[in-house]
Amino acid sequence: MEDTKLTSWSDFEAEIQKLNHLREQRERDNHRTFGELLFRGLGRSEWGLETTLERSYPLESSDETTSLRQYYRKIAASKPAVEMITGKRWDEVPNFPEFERKLQGHHGEWLDLFLNQHIGIYEYLIYLRHHGFPSPLLDWTASPYVAAFFAFDAMDRSATHVSVYALLRDSMTSHSSDAHLFIVGPYVRSDPRHYAQQSRYSLSVKQEGHDYHFLPHEQVKPTGLLGAEGELVKFNIEASKRSQILRHLDLMNINSFSLFGSEDSLIRTVARRECLFRT
Image (cartoon, rainbow, N blue to C red; front, side, top):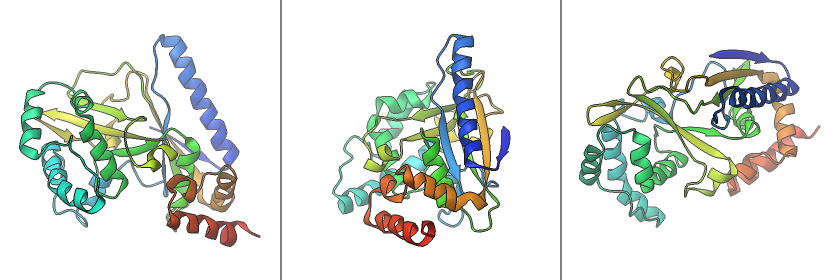
């Protein structure tokens, strides 16, 4: 994975332009379509591409859940409580025994084909991801500016650099192994913040027998899951630029309130304007 240190916002925008040109050039040279560029911001350059499910063990989970069946048992058991408290209905999400029967009938196929046939499961997974349930989905955005906001907004106090990852997928993927990475989005029924944040989600899995096991996203490049000419790039931006860049993004209407739309995010946005941006 290419790792690039940047010293200014203009450097970041220039690198994004280079990536866009790279995507266009590779499409012309290879006569095929590449996936849209996706971005993910992290508040410390040493942090990797970990899902909330990976991060949950051992503080928030008693076991390392790596199996789809194991994970589905937990979210299916949680569904009645979620429906009762929120008033939302997830009628298209089967109970665990029914899910097992459906999955066994799908043996030998890619997991995304199965989930596309059961879109209610997709939507439930995304809903849980947005509201704090440990998830194997890794969230991305189609906007490099939204990714930069998340990197600086949640910046670790001791960070010297924050990171923005950029992912480019080639449509010609390798099927030489049973490992697979796929992207969910943009048009699924979800929380309104899904659209405000231009959210996408990736899931990295490996088929094992009648089950699927989640793979760390850090392994996607070595296993060829980005395709023949895919790229995973990491931009490290100096943490000292935080106030300047957050103010610049706020002028573009990229802030907590525009991305979350809640009262709490409104107060955070107003406070930042008064306490951090005003000189």
